[in-house]
Length: 115
Length: 110
Image (cartoon, each protein chain N blue to C red):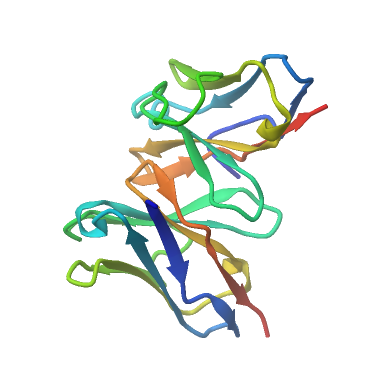
């Protein structure tokens, strides 16, 4: 089955770091743009970041710029989201999706930032 | 607050046709293609429409969409109970250099 999935979520305290991973099956993730989107409790979808297939084009939402870093390891066919200086308002389900327009989504991983 | 504006809720009875609007600006809908996504809480969101009005394979033709100027709309005809979900429009914004999502519309099938 063609699918994507996220891993690495969890409970952290404010100021701490977490790294999310995104992988896929039945297609070569290395040849696709990957986008990260999050949904805070009771809120709508919010775009976080995106990275081109070769990793040479990267964009971030203003809300995470300077704190989050997106990267990819095409030899391992994985994409990462390094999240530093986490804040309570970063609490959300984080989804990875394929392409700039998100034609395929993962089921998400929950990140909770709380003391 | 989303730059793409959607009504927070919509409703209809089985068999009816409902439309959901999405209002933006020249830097997003007016200059870039629109996609629509369906999301049931606890599940992976699903792409319904891309490139303004194209359906991926497997999406029923009950779902259609259009764009006019800086506004977009999603229409669902022959409403079914399984259509009850949250619907989001999305478009790239050339000024922000990022993907914008609308605030989402919760569709209730009465």
